[in-house]
Length: 115
Length: 112
View 1 (cartoon, rainbow over the protein chains, first blue to last red):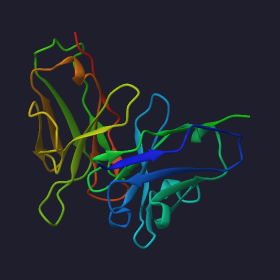
View 2 (tube, helix red, strand yellow):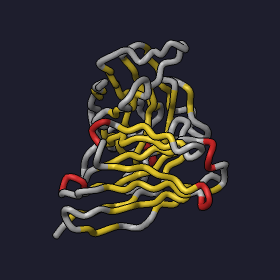
View 3 (cartoon, helix red, strand yellow):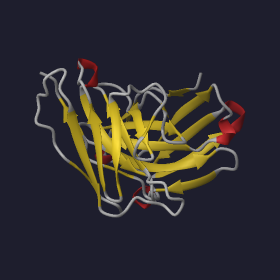
View 4 (cartoon, chains in turn brown, red):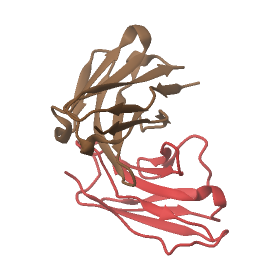
């Protein structure tokens, strides 16, 4: 069965970077886009972008240009999102979700930015 | 960006009653292929969102027939029949008609 297993919670300092992962199993990793979604505490959902692991193509929400970088490692069927120059506004739960239609979601990774 | 505006529910909703959630988009979600790209999700407390319907009205695999999506253009509705305790949570609509994909702010369903 399809599973998306995300990495654990991160506590990081302002100004630093963090890389979170989403390990896929149960399907052909290179055949489906992987999307990333942000959810701040008590808030709604915000679409960050997607990566197509088959060729590395990406599409970003312009709001996250320069903030998020999406990559994928075909050998380990793992998608990654790096967040840079972190501020308190980046404290959130980040989800990966597979296309089409977001039927499959990871469990979420909590990123807390604090000194 | 397309703005998604969701309506509120008259919480709490009595168990066994029906509930309808509205979602309005600032632009038509009909694509040139004729499909209307509107998704509905339920997020239960502490869980990841769960896809309920896509293309406005196509129910996702395993989703109860009590959930039905409808609408066209810019106005959409998710109807939940015979509300049960497990339906409690926050419901989100999402447009995937154009980039950036955007979500509504969410509609909370509480049960009596």
